[in-house]
Each structure stands twice: as structure tokens, then as C-alpha cells.
Length: 239
Image (cartoon, rainbow, N blue to C red; front, side):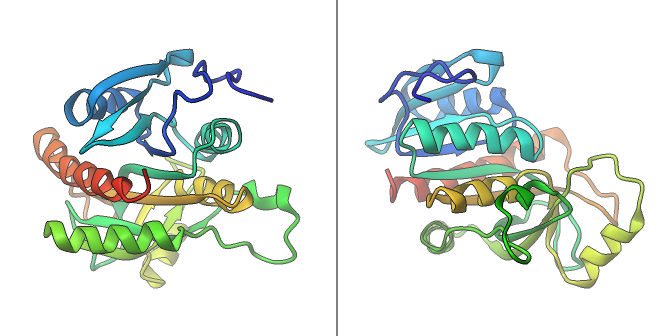
């Protein structure tokens, strides 16, 4: 298959080598309109908006990926395999789990434990751990330090369920000091690993699973701006 694909109307060359991916396509539009210079929309299919522009002179794209492992892996696969994308940085929210994780914390997801069966397709003889790419992860950590943005580096749990009704998963995650709960990173990491590409998830803790705390809308937006700044500055090293 070649570009365009059934899910992306972009033509070859329309998308940069590095792509930022929030779950919400409207957040992709917000990033393009508020952070990129001269953004051009390259995709409207299923309203999964994507844009390419420049940031500090570097060509960068941003595109939504939807909710859950099937959605993010579909869009990531097409970007990697058919559009020449080398690096994807997921930017999204996570629910805090660890006692050491708090609202507004920024997480660099080193690896993603998961209850998903997505990796069964690879027939790997054992458990194939979905993990971040070291060049992206180390660059993001160094960039965060330079920007004076505190980050936590560690595991997240990537669930297929949003409305899960079992406390066992949450308690097990806390036992192993997993930092946060989300729904996409494992699929992105496996897809990148299978295609020898790079991926990283940068996540903002917007609520906490155990305490019930949650950021109000205005504070959530401010915290997400810090995450976006970190992702953009990191992306510049790979553009």
C-alpha cells in the first residue's frame, strides 16, 4: 500500500519525519494553531485531523490518534510504513496510580505493561515488553531538565478498558509502583518496535485513580501546555 491510505488522505511528502500525536484530533488542531508556524492540514478523513508546520525552523507534524490500542496502532503503522515517519511522540493524559504520582506530574513512559492481546500477532516466544525508544526518552529527559519541567520516568499500565470494574488491576499496578494508567502507549511502542522506528509517550497526570482528585479544565490546559512544550522541544532534535 502507498500513500494516501484508507485512513489518511495525505500525499507522499506532506508529513514530517517526526509526528506529535494526541488522542483528540481537536487537540492536534489546537497545537498546530498555537505552536506551529504556517500549519497546513493534510488529513480530514474521519475527522482525524493532521497538520504539518514548523517549530523553531524545524518541520514537525501533529495528528490525532483516537482512543485505545487498535486506533493508535492503525494510525501509527500507516505513518511509519507509508509516510516515512521515523519518530512519533504521543502526548496525552494519564490517571495516577502510584503513591508517588500526583496531579500535574509529567510522565515519560519508559515501558507499558498491559492487559492487551495486541502482541499475539507477533508470535514472540515469551512476553514482548512494549518500551520507549532510548534516543527519544533520553532526549526528552534532558530537555525537561533544561526547561525546568519536573518529570517522572517509569512504567505505565496500558489498559483496553476505560470503565473497568476490577480493583485487582489497580491494586497490582500500585504494588509494582506503576506511575499511571492510560490506553495507548503499548500499541504505539509495539508498532514502532516491529517497524524499527522510534516512539515515546509523554503524559500529564490529570486525575488520580485512588484519591479521586481531578484537575479542573483551566488547570488541565496549563499543565498540558507544559507537556506540549516539552514534546515540541524534544521533537526538534529529530526533525
